[in-house]
Length: 377
Image (cartoon, rainbow, N blue to C red):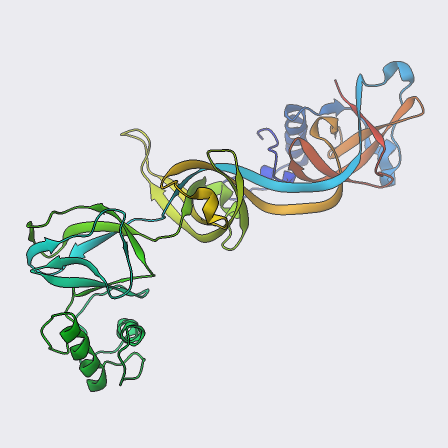
């Protein structure tokens, strides 16, 4: 077993990465002794006879007392992990041309495009942004049903067109509204929204980069531009074993380059595969977390920046704690503390909880706030 890590319980640290196997008690006890010793704890040969029912173990005189002591305190411990993050506008999406022709207009990098506006133009005909969570993948015409139809109808209604029911059916009433919309945008009034005429995105987009130039021929499947959302977002990649830290809706703390800390909230969590750092390294599994920033003004002027993100998986309020180095590993298994009272010491058996910030949650019969514990050599 490796050293006990801060911010995890003993059970979490002791869990093997592969399927569990039954182990002998002797091997488990040995592992516990190594873990505590590595964490700065002591190793004390106290047999179970001296600790029955939580009673005091053998005592030591003043001449044998430990060189340092610490107090048992009551406080709140947080199970936290710090990770590097990148402040930006979130995931980048590529907009493709679905129609052949010539690219006749492109927006500027950094421009914001809203519902009904042009993302780009091919043969001077607009490819327009609409809001929705289903990508465009087919022609939309009378008789077609589906979520993409509902997205289209909802956008037409928001743009001021009516006379149809917003649902998942493309009817003749929908076609009439489409023809009116096509007339307003200088398109042929066919009543059919051909594939490539609209691009669905969750909301307003910000043009991130351009992959084509005005005057360049367009072919189906050709990259034209990339875009992101318009809100500042922090992207963080965590190790797979830290997945417990990233829960959608959980709050985090983000430290900006100027040292200011702002509150954030995890909005999306996904498992992703990232390439190895070196050419021959295997791909790695990572947990990608997107974090929205509450105080957007604090990040004003920062399009991209490296930030620090503190994740809190759990919190233990109002618990007794001692320094990790105060733990002693008992010969018969488990952990104890050396209690210093009246110039003498005794050992009591305790249970450990959360490790965090160099301290550990402890509990046991007779253990109270304010007691003095020894710090083993």
